Length: 274
Image (cartoon, rainbow, N blue to C red; front, side, top):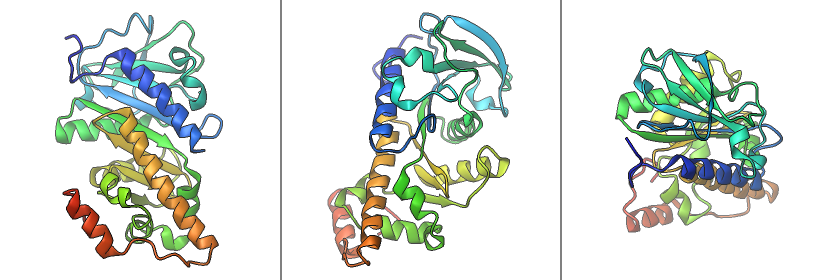
């Protein structure tokens, strides 16, 4: 099936990933090779022109709901700030086989990574869960390491979803509109561990962005790569206000709950945080 208006083209998605990586770095949410991006495409896409090299791989975990689809992902160790200038060398496309356990990895002749992102298991698990539960045909997933959000998670009082959301949703009227589900706060787990993967999948069922305590964030969107990055940016901006207020001794009022509720009513937003 060829690309339709509801299906972005491969060129468009590659460009979005490059621009998204640059923006993540602009807000200091990815140092060196930290951070990674993936996109699930549930329609047939010819990737051979962009990624002519092929190899068979075993997936980290079974993903039967993704069978027949393609996951485009950044390579391990690739700097997100460099993707836009040379995208094909920094990513690969995995066509998921019907068994859901193996795939064909397609890469470019300019490939500059040994394997896909070290967080591939977390990305695939989120795609698998959302596709299986909701039947979506597209999803973007972004892992970043925004400094102010990550710093707050080093403070025990903020390692609580209720406390974190009450703190960060009060700084800008836009935040309740853009992060109406709030941000889910997960405990610290070893990156790549089973506990991390399970908690991440559960958190992203309820929220569109989660904070991995003392590590970073993962966000998702079934609209665009840009939207997944927007969630990181809104959450990090809110965390920066909270950090500034901590430095100032907690002197700022912030938006009251009544003011936040008024904004939500005006824009027809439903949220548990009102």
